Image 1 (spheres, rainbow, N blue to C red):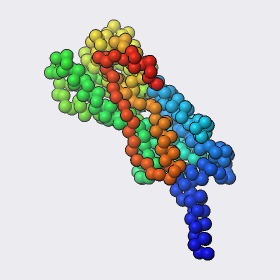
Image 2 (image 1 turned 90 degrees about the vertical axis):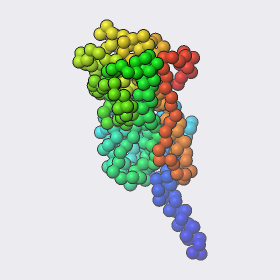
Image 3 (image 1 turned 135 degrees about the vertical axis):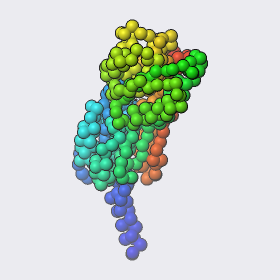
Length: 341
Ligand code: GZL
């Protein structure tokens, strides 16, 4: 008789969710409760996604990846919250998802800090959180299941190494090289990592000088403003490091409007990040010298992790997505046609 009772108690504990994943498993099958639970009762896994905003081509491709992956056909109900570039909007959306008792919360954090309180609220509610793309820095461990994204410092280092090789190939490795950087949203992982990664390589080259670094907030308009400011301040810029393609588009416009040239046969070398389709076309047109890919198609990897959590499996805490780079010595025409973003 005791054995029967203990088995019933164990099943009851599992079904009531002694951990986030157990709760998610239960809410995936059936449970009474608030509105999002109705979806779960209908057999859907409800996913609340807190997106950064719509600041860049990369971001649009990233959002589309989630909308294409988390569909009803695939067994999901996606609640999509656009943060419109503000952390307070993302925190508000997370709290709404907690109230709606979704099965999972996905967070692409605009900046790295300021998330401890709301992550603790999600943990107390038994809702697993997956951090995607940009990273969070928390005081306490165990506030989220895992992080999936790019190695931003590696992207920055690879850009620095590419520049060193490029200058060597042009016989300019001993020349005084003046560099400016158009940075992304300050405090975002992409900005912090790319700035640090390139900065580490800069230190290895005594003949390289960083004239200035300013944030263009990952948008084309602000990227153009920053480049116009650099062109007013400095008259001998050799290289522009632009931490995403949309700011690069703005920078190219500013350089050409100032009567200067850039890219393949230009006065100013342009190194960009993201490698979206429109930037690769601009590279073919001769405006951009090199572009370091940041893969926005994260949703399929996130979905695989949710399947694992549903099955009660544990996850790798840090998961990097594969990515490469492109430069204007490559044949990009055929690549562009098949490129998803
Ligand atoms: C990088 C991502 C950055 C992109 C920008 O993972 O967070 O945000 O590089 C986007 O284009 O705005």
